[in-house]
Length: 481
Image (cartoon, rainbow, N blue to C red; front, side, top):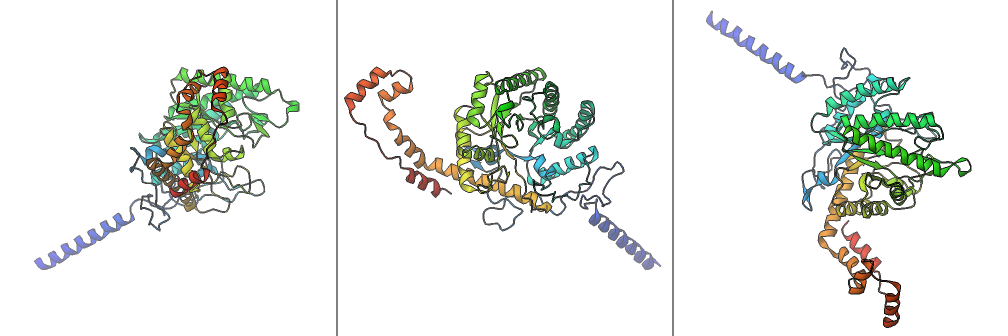
């Protein structure tokens, strides 16, 4: 009798243990975030994973063959006395990553991510926001960037539009926690038909007023989310022809717009940096902030030099006929380098393709400027880059960012090698060493007049001109790649 009771007890324990193991194995739902799944809650908000097949991306080193790993980006590794994550301050661009469709002027969208329901509703916007933060968590990043209209849909009135934005931003604030924040926010002032003549430079007073209201709200939202910067990109701030354009008046209007933005920023206590993003053209024929030098001159003319820095985009640099390195150095030596939109264009296509930066040589040049600038904080590197039209797997979103991060991390390592070696800096020093003299110092101090210089020219005779050693400089640079 006792033996039978023991057997029953043991059988009961076995069954309970089996049931418990099954429950643990099943756990909470982790099904993919597609519209046909059963993971939506009663409120319609997604509760499962958006990227169930993707692990958290970790550093595995250059020898790793795992595409879902970092080969060169090791966040906490110190380079020249600063952690790699502090040199780079990487950020995900919400618009390209979660609103990019693969459409181009010649073809329909090719991407409809599993979680998309085909609408631009507030509910869908909130689902995208949840996907954004899962994406950041799996990449190990703590910064993101956004346009207001990419985050939440337009309403029929400004009030309704702002209410939509507030609802989605409240969720973003909750999901951010204490560690994540926007690298920067901005207002989308180029897509809607009302902005066809521009926003701050529109010939229509009503559009100028509307743009001011939209930027006011976007600054408030960026401030609320703890954003570190705010960007002005004037995609429509320019002209198609001068025949119907009062360029002087438009530039004056844009300056007044920026002055009002600065005043409002100070009024609400937003301490983030204002950034202007230069671009020469596209969609306009000529954009007023053509390149870094043009933007710097605009700021200088209107007394705004102390209120703004520049957000340099590499693809925009090449569109203006410059290298990214040139634009970064122009911004840096003017004290205006604030942020970098990390991407590249295809020289064969010649337009703004917004590809992930994969060129190690360019990345090394970029990081030389960043190191010479002492870093980018409170700015960073924003991946203003999108998948190619033909890349349609969810995994591709991760592969693009991993490759972009590794490219810049490798560029950082190369630039550090060049600086530690010192050969390139020594070559440059020697090239200008004739100015390391008494007369050279007088020239650089602005104390040498033409009478004195003429006297020296007669005394010294024909000057000796040394080799620039360009090939040696390129050899040294290439040796670090």
